[in-house]
Image (tube, rainbow, N blue to C red; front, side, top):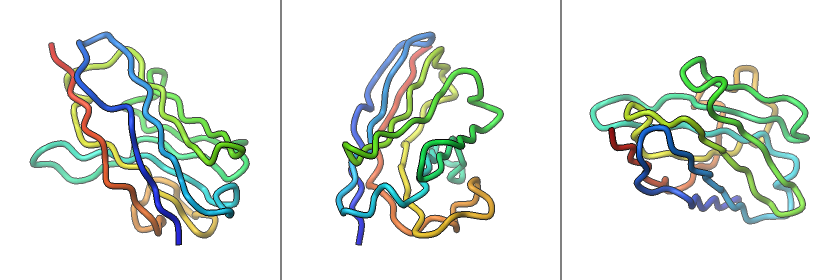
Length: 125
């Protein structure tokens, strides 16, 4: 069993930056591919970014590419999402997720087995 706890959300002005963290429990964290998703009010949960277990491969959605960067520190059991040039449309609850096995499509929420409780990010215009 893996428990995920997100932190780092908050209120920021458009153009600003935030770094989200997701701390994981469990000794096998370093073997799990990880992902970030977000859900805005009235919308479906959408893929944001993913990273392989080693950190050697990363994936970002087109809507955040060039602005957000996913990374991980396996020694600290933590995955990060650095968010720059934030826009009001980035406002959402952000969730981190862990997959027990290598995913065939990192963008699919069904690939992930464990989810955090989410952290709110609000970007004001």
